Length: 512
Image 1 (cartoon, helix red, strand yellow):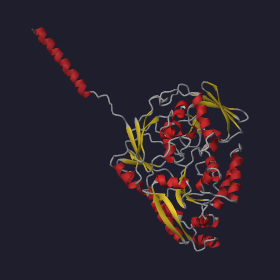
Image 2 (cartoon, rainbow, N blue to C red; image 1 turned 180 degrees about the horizontal axis):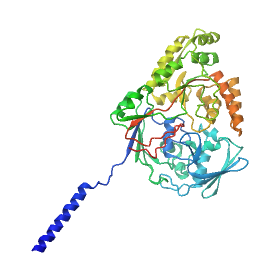
Image 3 (cartoon, rainbow, N blue to C red; image 1 turned 90 degrees about the horizontal axis):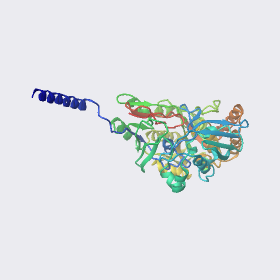
Image 4 (cartoon, rainbow, N blue to C red; image 1 turned 45 degrees about the horizontal axis):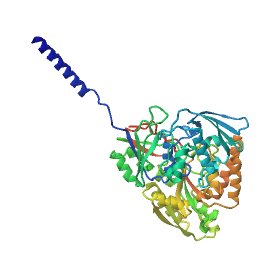
């Protein structure tokens, strides 16, 4: 009987210890890490070769990857899916040695056929605005299972930088041929850390962790959710209430209140350049005197203080100081109302005219700027009708040249000024970035830009781009406004948010 009691006592003690362990040891977590980001606009198209707005491009970078990538400071090119590369002495042939064992998010292995298909789709497209940036490519071939060779038509000073662009990413040939352009636009498949899970247009995009991602243990987050919240006040209240984790495009006048308590503010360096698009095809805006008068009439220093808390810099054009070959000798036009009136008197519209200024509804910065511009231009006889539209309509009107003037911005996607030359200067490149700029100075600027695209000597190339910027600044087909840092706010629990000056999101380490 004693032995039985002792045994029962031992069993009971063991039971108590076991139960204690159950209740004191941490339970295995089954909860996933989700990061919700509020941004002002939805994406339109997620096909890497056809997307052209930052709301498309920056999220595409979560899904697709290229041979190379831009560095964290946005100034250099680093390996991505290529381990390394060789360049022939004549600068014509580039050989890339690919990482082995990389898979797409659907589990299929990446092959050289996928790479060749992806590049040929890009360089033969008749609709992509990015095709011109790869016109130096003559042929892409495979020289082994993990070796890709590019033969160029001529040496190119920016080819390597171009390979880091989102549009030069690899996608599965079989999938793309099966679903076609429309299917790719709705759901691209790539090798990036995330894959598209769902897209409720106008409301949110959901990206899930890529289970086949080639970097072990990454990404840290299980899901990234992008909510569309056009109104600045709404997204700020959502962040403060803990309904979202991150908000983008934060108004500068709200940064102080978001820098305390449970939230924090980031201001990454950027190539973001704001400007006023003006439709040069309109008679009133075809005269350079009028365009210069409009810029002289704006007190940009006052706008900088009111909207950006003085943290922006006055712009001289579309090439940012963060890019190579920026012409620092060009100085911003100062506020000079008398000079503006003098230029108007020399134009065909000495008594002024009426035009509209289009901007995105819900954007407090743009609303403030539009109101200040309206007041400024009224002093030289230009009556401005303010037109607030949803972002999709704004960009549709801009793309179709159905606007008169429009608040706009541009960021570079590569660590090189080539995009400026190919898009803003070229009459074929979106009609000089939808400005419809024409005339002798446009033609001369395009000649210099074309030469710069093939000049291998850095000093000579800088001189060519300096001339391009001088001509652009003299004719002002677009009205330069500011060089602006990115402004992002998040909960203090969020870690690993990275955005380089080119706008590229690196969310591999994003977590909370």
